[in-house]
Image (cartoon, rainbow, N blue to C red; front, side, top):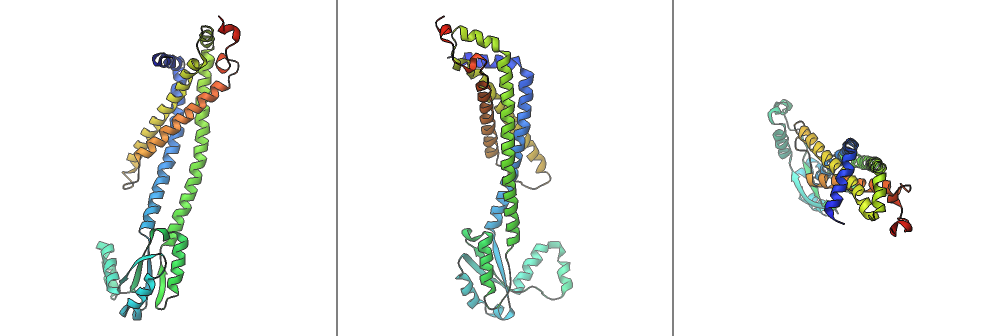
Amino acid sequence: MKLGYLLKETWRTITRNFSQFFLASAVMAICLLLTALFLVITLNVLKISASARAWAEIYAFVTDDIANDPAPLLKRVIDITGVAAVRFVSKAEAFDELRAELGSDTLLLDVLGENPLPASIRLALHPNYTDVENVSAIEQKLLLLPGVTEVWSGKELLAQLNRALKILLIIDIGIFIIVAASVIFIAFQTVESSVITRAQEVEIMELVGASRMAIRIPFILQGLLQGTFGSITAFLLIFIIFKVVTSFIPTPFFPSGVVLGTTLLSGLLFGLGGSILALNRLPSTLIAKPKPQRLRSL
């Protein structure tokens, strides 16, 4: 079974229904584009969530008495499970930080006349303790300490990111299932049509002794090529969309290797699956059944 022969037969199969092959590849590309788009969105949310956890910090605001001598409280806070480091921020330091963050809007602070910000103890957490449950537990322990008036951690933002991530994952799974069924069906229909169009040629090839595998492989390659063209087109489209989005949103996350690999692998598997299903669902043709014994003797 020569490679040149198989490629030639594959090309003949495609050119017989080139318009159908082209349209099927285009529809595949649109379907795979949806998968790639939601994959990129999910990866961006994952990165934002990971960054939020990496920068997770708890603010424990303290009374003026503690601010005058924070050392005893700092020792108790550092002993809390999950706390990696602590530092004391005085009222003056907090005011200077706020002034730096406001930049040109510092006139708003000058109107206040005096520093309204309380002193605080800021806690950095171990990576394994940055989830919402552990952050809430640490908050409760801090509130029990004398001199701590209020605790802020931003756990609400973490909870919202987790909810968004769960929703996106559910959507991803749903879209992947729909796209998989759609692309497999498209490949199935295209290969089935090609088999029917070349039914007479296939029968002649069987009569002259061609093996079932030699007849099947060109149709399988057709499905693989459809998936490949659809995948590459989908990747190019998502890359163009990414470039457009970057002009509005600064530095979104786009792992080109992961997106290309996932899209290409999906297209190949779906194209292969559709072509195999089409060949196996055509028992009326000689492709799908063994050659009769009387033909083998000819």
